[in-house]
Length: 241
Image (cartoon, rainbow, N blue to C red; front, side, top):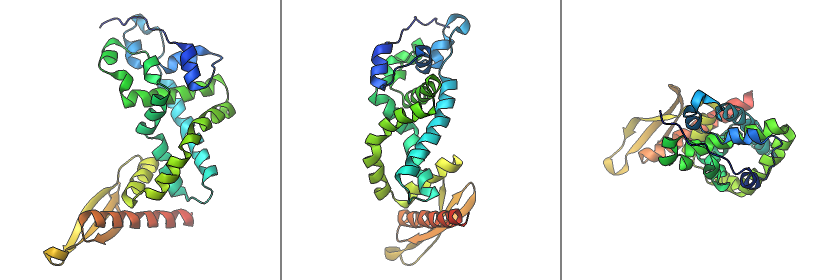
């Protein structure tokens, strides 16, 4: 195993980009340390960012949910879950990290670094989650909340636009992935009519169980109709308690 070169973090620049000054800078260094870096150190003398990532993921889920709850008082539970899933998905969190140039401050093992690890979305997402965990440990929940809210505020218009433009399939997928960590599946269960005006019936299933059916004059339209039926069922069940 190749021994990685010692890497330092420009803490001043990184904290300026984060908009937060650490009382314990070692937490920030840990948040920026990819497992590949630690694996190449003699005797694994440092901690990587995986534990902080775990903590930050939990804190993000709570604070993003709280932010959405307060911003959209009329939204149902299903829609809030879907919006949260949209905000905390890998691509979105990697976007936060990219805006702060987190990748250029991370510490990687030699192989991960030369293969483009600083640009990899999974790495950026994990580092951002770890930074959230580090900010929380360095301060408290109120401070972490205020810091995160400053990052969410510029995205408010994007979330408003996302609410207006989501099609039923996208809405259902975000909701199901956010709540159950799985993806809905669609199947065409019937088709009828002449070729020039054939009508399809689609069924959407969640974890192997049917949740909605819909029809349309194309397979895609039938799937959208099935997703809309599933969302209506979810909303009814949520309102029933």
